[in-house]
Length: 431
Image 1 (cartoon, rainbow, N blue to C red):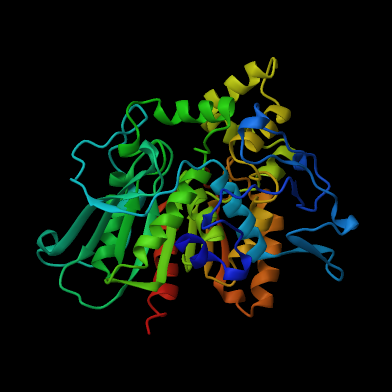
Image 2 (image 1 turned 180 degrees about the vertical axis):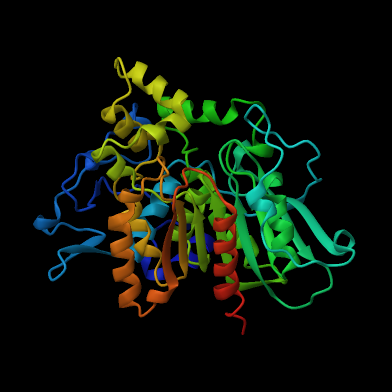
């Protein structure tokens, strides 16, 4: 109940008995675009899943919808509150039993697990993050390791790492940092230390099936394939978004954090987590996804899905075999997205979730030549976001930067852009 009360007014909540039920997500989701990727495919075992999807009536039929037509612009205007409500229903659809949010202490991780070989050892981009030189920095740095219980089950134990400077009694701005595929929260330590030195409370988590939530080199891959075959979890993006909502519950209760000044950022998969986490939870007040925002539906329509698919190819190869295909094609891609992350390539894609973040400050930083996040696929999200921020008289709070000549990698330029954005919009919000 605390979760939904924080996100939506009481009038928006659907109550069953004395508790919030696992609300069945509507079968009809109207994204309002006449696009092949709006076709949705139900999970393999429909009777075992908490929600199902089918094609929604087109915009012209004036069906119940989370979007509406702007007659002058011929564009779509997102009903952000309804989108968040429906997204939350989808997140709840494959949850294990809900349990009270609890906190328990943890020990520092001495040998964090990386699900890639060779193991990464250094990030020039992260090391370049602006940092205040403080004498005896290590002795003045406060480190907390803990676990939050976000739901029942093994994956409901969320490992959290928090760095801050000792001594301050004031509420400070906080930033949540999210790692990329196959890495972990410890990998982000250079960023955490840099932001902590500048007066932030810096937080990192292990995303689902990563770090302490993984047991071997194939844990994440295996979870993706299981989701395709069984429709029982949402390890690609959505399950971690649930954790981020629960994390916000915890952070807003801490005495050292200003609950109105919590930012969120991440790289690649972490950038997607930051984008969707902020879309569903308005308590993340400043948002900087790095090489994460993309148009999933656009990529399918324009045959630009290959690079994203290659990043988690074993999943798509398994789907190809199950579907009796000789090669991965757009139909395979479409069916995988709709089964493992319902709405990802339709109702919750970037043309809808990016403008839903308005009017909170949002900086999107990508590489201009990134094949996983094609720049052309962001034209519609960008135009709709500009419209949404303009209507909120907050045009200065939205910015999309595509670094020339850069593919799918985070650069020192991106880290500096993110740093400046947070300093501008989190520190100036101090009461």
